[in-house]
Length: 397
Image (tube, rainbow, N blue to C red; front, top):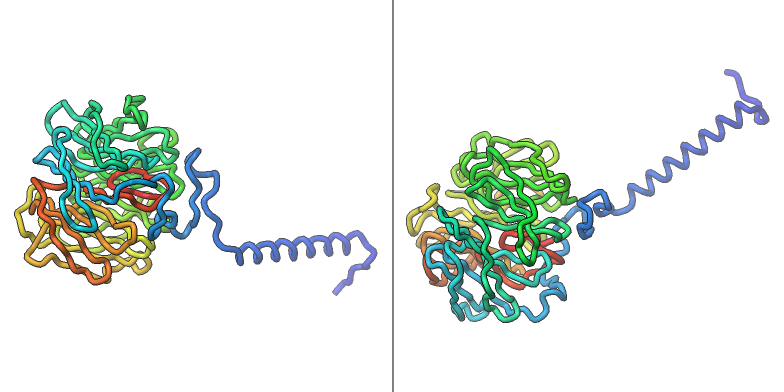
């Protein structure tokens, strides 16, 4: 073997390369030892940074209440689809403390991005007089309704600059001023009949919406406002709520006809799995510690189901992607939409076909029933932890 002269240029070049390689290896090892960095400026422009890339819900943990909700009354707001009103419950006493009229067919109570207003989405099914009713969470009282076309549901851009009204009957997303609700622009999502629920990627650059009446999903580029594609669910029939996993890698999609949850790789926009959960799978809510997903099974595959169905709540472990607990409702029921309490100890859900509200103990699964009015739907527990809200009944980040 030929040895290099230590004074030669070849030796010096070789030594220099070895030193560079050693330095690079040391840098990579040091980087690997560091905690995974949060999502950086590559996300949606102006979106608050993700604090923990392993748990995008970390800022909405147990009792992590923002100063923005200071002074808000602890209340549960329940929209009643066929009563055209909102019932207000004191979560401590479990008593109805108020009731007020809103618009036609109130569907969901949606907290605003800045946490200052609760919006009632009155979509006036098969009519043209939809509206949004604002509620002041500090007084619990409604304000003057704003005329808005078909507001079945509502979300917000990740930077809070615009509201996204989901006009279900028109296969359309309306981008509006988040306060005045004046419409700025619209995006037609052709082929997505019954567009209604959504969740956002960890970086906020895209969202996936469910298409209830075509058994499909729509992926929307939120930066360039365009449809990236439609995905027909294999074995699905009527997708409902959707929530992203804490690490942002997998979207969980409740399907009312499939009786379970589909797993979707968000980046590849591909179906990768399915978890059976119960009859009429509908609503999805992460636990306050971000380790579990509460799945509301409405007890029927019908849009207008019978009373006292086989309703239940299944608890999915995010790490194993398996159901670890199932909580039935004694005597039957129809759990639909709702929220987890600020302390994480209760799961509040509307009982849509039974005209009642359920309060589940998240430790034992024991359930309490509270009678309300006609066809309660997307209730909201307030205040909730988090820095801002992306919409629905409290998609907090």
